[in-house]
Structures are given as structure tokens and as C-alpha cells.
Image (cartoon, rainbow, N blue to C red; front, side):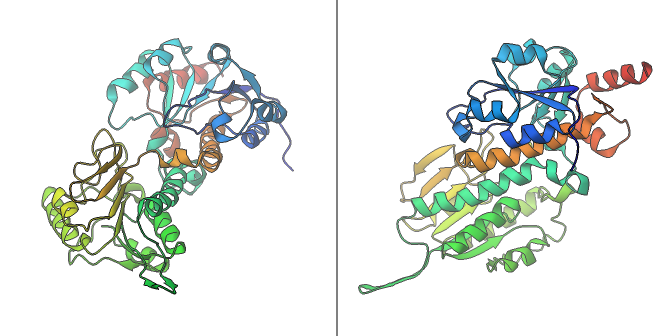
Amino acid sequence: MAETQTATVTFGVFDETSQHESRVALTPDIVNRLRKVGVSCLIEKGAGIAAHYTDDDYAKAGAEVLDADTIVARADALGFIGRPDRALVERLRPGTWVIGMLGSFTDGDYIDALSAAGLIGVAMERLPRQLSSAQSMDEMTSQNSVMGYKAALVAADAYGSFFPMMTTAAGTIRPAKVLILGAGIAGLQAIGTARRLGAVVTAYDVRPASRDEVESLGAKFLDLGLDFSAGQGEGGYARALNAEEQVAQQTAVDEKAAGFDVIITTAKVPGRKPPVLLTARGVEGLKRGSVIVDCAASELGGNVEGSTIGTSVTDGGVTIIGAPYLSSQVPNTASNLLARNVADVLAHFVRDGRLAIKAGEELDDALIVTAAAAAADQTADATK
């Protein structure tokens, strides 16, 4: 059994609860896990309530339950579900590590603000998923898995009939036909959940490897008659299609979509505008009563043309649910997974009793996004 080290690094987490957010970036079991690698934990009062963890749960695990100002003053590193807002960035002490989904692919001004404040930004969206050592740190995989599971439940709830085939004295009700667009982590979970609910499931993805994954779960692979054999992108994500490929894919999907009762779209491109998989024409072709759950809906758009965050019903009677917050609707499990991801990222940088960076190490170079990090590491090296 690993011995608990004397805590030399202090890690803090704030209450990020909002209308759409119920998760927390630290759970009581992770408090124990971090203490074993020399990290003490601070958490803001009430931060875990929405995820069903009380302040007493954290205190019993060994965390200090404090107000936000005290955490700002004492923490060496801070963990976030998303990222600190600009007002909080201005309050943080120079040299503080900020770990979370920082939006580094699309918001260079924000990263510049972190750097200007002397903060060390650790952008979890840049995690190199191909590294076996990084698998337990992969927040996108863990949260997308929860999202895909919940998407199938949301679709089943909104659909006006049964998902499974039912034989009754009044006749037989056919099973729902469900189409999953995007067969990554979220899509595969949606496939498995919809299948367990009894639906007949078909799925599509541009990545060649996805066919075997889809069929291994008992679903059919949608053949669009197109060849995107180079559909695999970096880090296991689907690559962005060029304009010609997008048009061909959209046309084919629009034609096929009319045969389905429920469509779930899960194709996110990390940090970028999601691809449109189903156009307005395709939505118009769906039967009245059909349901679409667009997991990629955002301020940048979604996988469904015209989809917005929230629920809407078209003139043709199709329900479109723009649902980017599904992981937060399973707050306990999602928090357990996310807290492990954040904690393992933090633990990776705890070296010789302090937070440090190894220049030239692939994981470090990928995750650290501020110039302050390099300066801090050089200072540390010079004082050895």
C-alpha cells in the first residue's frame, strides 16, 4: 500500500454550480488520492452539493472547506470544470497553476490574459490521447461517455412512442429506428444505451475504424456510398472534412435520415465549430413526431443546421433538442470521472515535492499553454 506523503502542494477547487452546471472538479475520494502524492485540498463551501457531496463529506476526507477568497490566497494550483472567468483571473496570484478546459484552440486572447497575469495554464483539451500514460487524464473521453449515455435517455423521453418492440393485446408496436451520427466515445455510448432500451440502431462516422466499433455493439453501419478513407484525424478524433466532402456527406445523410424516428448527433471537433451533418432540408424530410438530440449544439452552431441550445419544435412537428450540457445532468458520475481526470493531470506535475515542468516531455509540452510556465520552470531550474 502506498504511503501518504507530507503535503507540499495545495490544490483548490471553487463552486462552479450554475443553471447548466452541477458537476464539481473534486470529489471526496480524490481528496484521499491526492494526499497520497503530497497534495492537500481546499474546496469552496457548497461546491459539491449539486453532485450530492456535502461539505462534511469533504471534511471527513481531509479537505479544508473554505471561502473562495481564502482558496485564492492559499492554493498553488486550481482545478476547473471549464475555466476561470476574467474577473477571477485578475484575482489569482502570479505563479498559480490553472487546470481545465481553457478554450486554447479558439480563444487566444484568453490564453494571453492568463500569461499576462503570470499564471501557468494547463489546457486539458490539448491532451495527447494517443499516449497510454494520459488515458486517465482524458476529460473529453470521460465526459463524452456520460453525454452519449444521457443523450439516448433524453431522446427516449422526448419520443412519443416506445423504443423497444412491444407486443400487446391491442397489437404489436414496432421498435424505434435510431440513427447516431458520430461514432466516437459519445456516439458509442449512445449506441449501447439505445440498444439496451430496445431500439433498432444505425450509426455513421467518417473514420474507417468506426464501422467495426459500431457493428461490435450490435448496430448497423450507415452506408452513404462515400469514401472518406482518410477520415481519421490526430489524437483519435475525426478530421474536419473539406468543403466538397461536407456537401457530399450532408446530401447523403439528408436522404437517409427520413427513414429514422430519432437522430442523435455527437460530432464535436475539439475547440472548433462543429460540422453540420443534417441540413434544414434533412430536418424537413423527417416524419412528424421525430426527435433530434444535437449534443454538439453551441454558440458556434451544431451538427444540425439551425439548432440552438434548448428545445424547439419545427413547423413539421420535429423536436430538436440542442443539448451541450448533458454530462452535467448526471452530476455524481460525471464529477467522479472528471475529478479523477483533473487530479491525474495535477499529480503528473508534482515532482520532488513541488509543481514542475519537464521541457521536451510530450505531455508537458502539449498541456502547458502560457509563457509564464516556461519562465517559472527556468527559475526553478536556476535555483537547484
